[in-house]
Length: 231
Image (cartoon, rainbow, N blue to C red; front, side, top):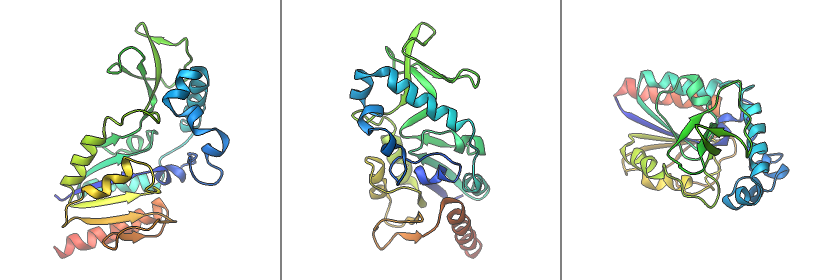
């Protein structure tokens, strides 16, 4: 089967009610970004960081995968699908996607402050953390890649894009690096699609589908399956 690699951003989860960060009314209008999502912010006020991500988890447990998430799962019947997501929610996994690589961390996990290899999944009935929270004797922090920190999974993500027969970008402004740079790793023969209701300017070889995630993925599926039938 062809390898379909999909890069998803905040627009992927917006239809599930997850607040985006950069759009009008988004989280960055409510919270200064460097205060709640940077390494310096965590060092200066870790209690605020814990409260901020506790709020994000409370929102996430009430959300459900949307038709777009489900549509990507359906594509696994026809393609080898790998998802690279900038989102820290677990909606891809809850929908049933089997190969998900998180670039910016995972909201429902924390990691030890003194050993970043020790990563813990939070129990559904104990999602709040604080500066005093310990697991197995370790104080913990959100398992989130803050601004000013390296993105450990960008190397594996680039490798996946290089292997793609079809590369799809969904619901992203293409302004957050290094994720925005993934487009530069596609091979010359790779089919490339960009799904967004308000797409930014992209090279002419990118096929733009001007739609939200759910409708855009339905349209993409029709295109891809029609191409498969012709092959």
